[in-house]
Length: 159
Image (cartoon, rainbow, N blue to C red; front, side):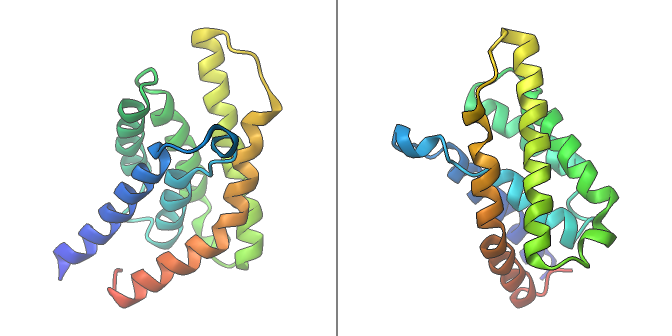
């Protein structure tokens, strides 16, 4: 039973990684939500003693390798985002799903700001407003991902 609990969390993170790197048409790719951030956010708020900054760091390394970015960019951005959630999880769990969606949008904006800042320091890329479209799509997807993962957590009795 314990193996199933850990396997379910790892499986959702792996599915999020696959969705993050799945090829999409260029018109839709601009709006790709932050799947990994959404899944890590759910688990960090639901089970902060199991999914924390360390898991975010390891997932960030996997993202850096899968996306071919400089090693450490996604690690740092995910770690900062998950730390912010983990530090406030008791307060955030009391909000409604729609209020949580706004918080996820702010966390996603923080994530993209840190990513841009690091990439700007390394490569000098200019800022474009299109970098923030994933913030909106992550906010819109949050209620459905929240309900799906909560249902899976309750059915598998993950605690």
